[in-house]
Length: 387
Image 1 (cartoon, helix red, strand yellow):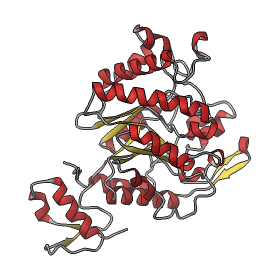
Image 2 (cartoon, one colour):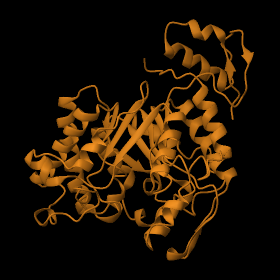
Image 3 (cartoon, helix red, strand yellow):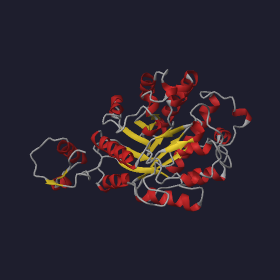
Image 4 (cartoon, one colour):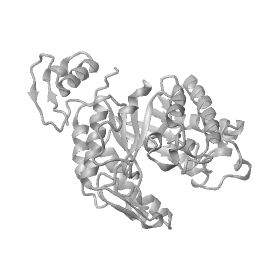
């Protein structure tokens, strides 16, 4: 990690940009001639990005929900809310009331002073088809009239936009993703990818007209983009993602390095350097690294990981985010959730175990080595270099 210095004079300069540029100069070995005092090299002088988590529960209990929520609020200044279990398709299309479950989710607000990042996916969990139905609960079968709708059909376009607008008006997020790991669909179906691109472009244009200052974007799954996922190897990820990025305010990455055997250990220093090539602000919409080996019996494979691997990934991620001035960095799981996995039926339990040990604390609330790195950055004062 590059050495960092704390310059007292920075605290009184007129803009965050000035202070941050000086910080970068010092961090990467340049000397602008200011008097400096060495600080703990693990703690940057300032932080240009928000840090946060989703509220994914550690267990299917009230205590599991509370444990994750409280950790997210205590160890971050942005909260990620992801609607990944479906869309209330007919209700949104017809302007009818939503179910109690939908309204309860729309009622969430982060603690005072913390930012909100909202993600809504028009795709199912495998990123292959239209998202399921969200009625009295999520992940329900699609109503009959919606089962064969194309992603760019007028009905899907109308319903998706209406749901996003009602969600934004209710929750007032600071950042909005209208596609989650959208590029994975390209790995499965070029025809449906073209449909999704049309849905995204039209939704993006309508939202920017209505909310001109709200950052609107989609997220990109990094292993598919880099063709480190076997399904992606025949797809034109670079050109297609670049094309859709013309209708996106940020490049937002989803990155879980342990999910591919082709990612070297330690993770290369330049692993995320490609993210700046689009000329847009960069963010990490979700991320994680397993802190132990995970045996997946249903898939007859073992994912490799350790606390040292998790710490190295966290250091690399946050160091890169500092250098390239990311907007925010989200870690998906606050807490290991093997207790949740144990309550799921096979093979869904094994699927969930892919991410079960990516939390920054154990299910018994014991901090992992990566948490010390995370909290060191969190303690650094936030200061956007773009203001």
